Amino acid sequence: MPSLARACAGALLATLLAAHAAAAAELVYVREAGCPYCKMWDERIGPIYGKTAEGKAAPLRSIDKRSPELAAIKLSRPIRYTPTFVLVTNDVETGRIEGYPGEDFFFPRLARLLEESQADIQPNPATAFSGDVGIGSPQRMH
Image (cartoon, rainbow, N blue to C red; front, side, top):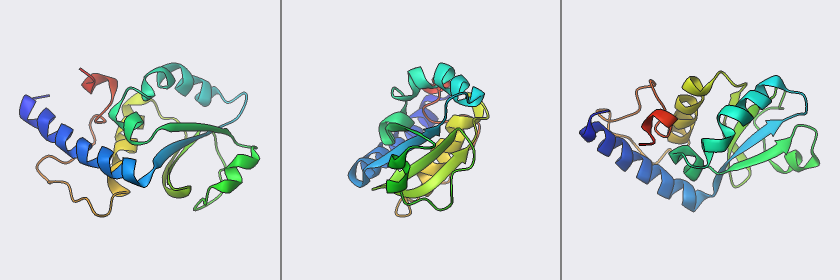
């Protein structure tokens, strides 16, 4: 990634991080025992998630699909599939990713959810996320 584009992406992400920190955003990972896609996410993304920009903007909270703890979150609709990743702010859903399509799709989708959840932030169209690679995906952690 050219250094100017990296700097612009970094500036946008810094804005997102600050806004999310103030709003107490988190990513709720709804899982269940025996879920093969949950296992895949745990192996491929779990170890690096907290080190990514997205992980810093929305720390992970893992909840079993059948846990009563899930009832404390105001969901836009019931959880039907695992894994489901629910972006929440103050325990109110602001977006979700159903399923795990692989890391090449997970990070861009999450970056888009983070951007969309910030109604007061208008990214510069010249530097806005293009959908190719997530801001904090392993390819951009250098």
